[in-house]
Image (cartoon, rainbow, N blue to C red):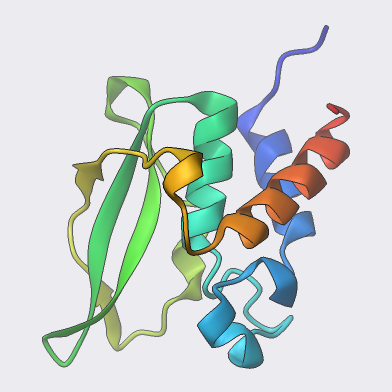
Length: 129
């Protein structure tokens, strides 16, 4: 069996994003022009499913005030993987990430349908069922 490469995972994730996989309250602003926008939480969880490691969360600041959170992954040897990094405009600054525990899926009230849809799409593109 061929090992999964990060480049394969990245391609599968990027090809799987849509308005239906982004944060629901921001769905109306999602567009093909910035497909990574509002995909960070579900993307970080799917990457965590596939590669393990830890989750990082930083604050998104505009004018020095927090307007949101940004999620990405920390793999072994301190390697950070952020597949949604390009979503931010120059005036949006992301603080250094802090390791946060992954909540059990049974406790998710928000983003569970979006996560499950993205995960299914990614696994199908990677040839796993």
